[in-house]
Amino acid sequence: MSAPLDAPRLADLEDFAVGLAHAAAKVILPLFRADHGLADKGAVTGRAFDPVTEADKGAEAAIRAAIAARFPDHGVIGEEYGEDRPDAEFVWVLDPIDGTRAFISGLPVWTTLIGLRHRGVPVVGVIAQPFTGEYFVGSQHGSRLIRGRETWTLRTRPCRDLSQVLAATTDPHLFTGPEVAAYQRFHAAARLVRLGADAYAYAMVAMGQLDVVVERGLKCWDVEAAVPLLAGAGGLVADWTGAPIGRNGGQMLIVGDASLLPALTPLLSPASAAP
Image (cartoon, rainbow, N blue to C red):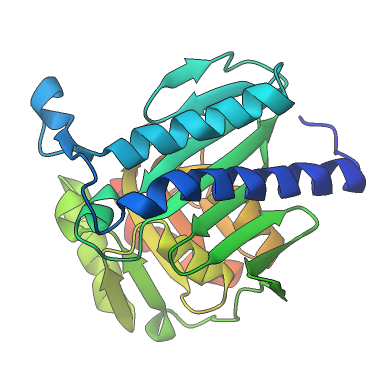
């Protein structure tokens, strides 16, 4: 179990994490809606289309360089360049562009995800959308939206009735096997389900605009930034059984109001993946 970080130390790490997102933005924004150097990782792995751009690679390299300069003893786990000291006391978990399909399509719902683990526990999370100028940051001391010189406190909204839920998922075609029926049960129960927002939807739950996000097949870099952000805003990140999500990702529920869990988990848990 991680010993709590004192408030000044945690605030310094939050500010540094936001700075990392700004460093990534300097690489990414000139390539958005421009020649982004698209490649297909799926062509190498033999899997379905898995896009990567020069913006993905350059942004992660910029983040890693900034971490090494300020905190040379910290570890890093990133989608593009793998692991470096993943068992260090502090480990940064990075997805330079979550939603690369949106990025290459010119849609401003991609984000930069920056999470920080302390002794294995996620303690700081940033979800950044620099094209709209939005930087969502959170920790145990609370979550906030920074846009320009203005800052707003983030709070999830009360929603205790599943029939009133505004929800999101990236793509229902990603669900497989028994997950398909589980998703269909959820879709039928919710008031509205929006598609294709990737991690931007996580920030919308923290902001009180959405109530639930349902995903599957996630990696740690897809999840870690969301955990402190949602906790600081009054929400939670869990697996489909309602348990805290593991460090390796997998099936995920982001919930703004925890009182929804007893209604959500019976719909999804029958398709829960084995631990």
